[in-house]
Length: 65
Image (cartoon, rainbow, N blue to C red):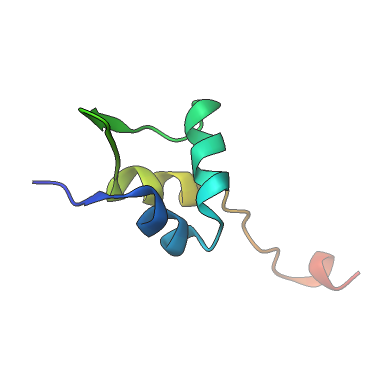
């Protein structure tokens, strides 16, 4: 079973405020599960959000210019 995070827990993992997480949910940038009045975020979806924003580092001579 997947690990489910609350909004404050997801914010801690991402290093952002809970308000940012709520806005990402509202803008549909972060998937969530609604359990009654509770909102939970799958830890895998948090990792996917991090990977989607990942920018690779340049290597070689071109990076030094």
